[in-house]
Length: 78
Image (cartoon, rainbow, N blue to C red; front, side):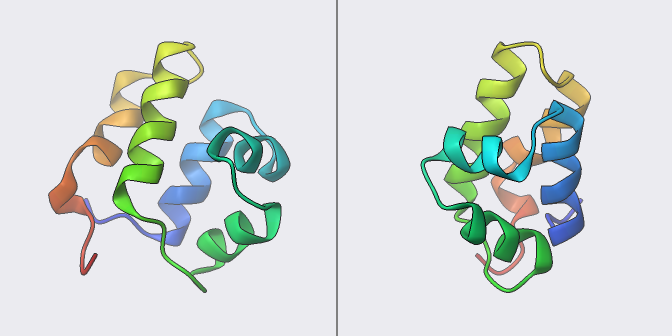
């Protein structure tokens, strides 16, 4: 699986967080997160990997939902 803007949004919605809440978890602006979800900018792989690990540890997402974000080769062109 390649990480896409839709998969970034899917991770956020699976965790049950708003854009504002997810941006806060990542220490970024809500606008920056919106840009990720629209494909304007691409996140660094480590940013979403960390987020997926936090949400997995807090039982907000399943291992299956986190798995694609844990693989560096899923980050096409980054």
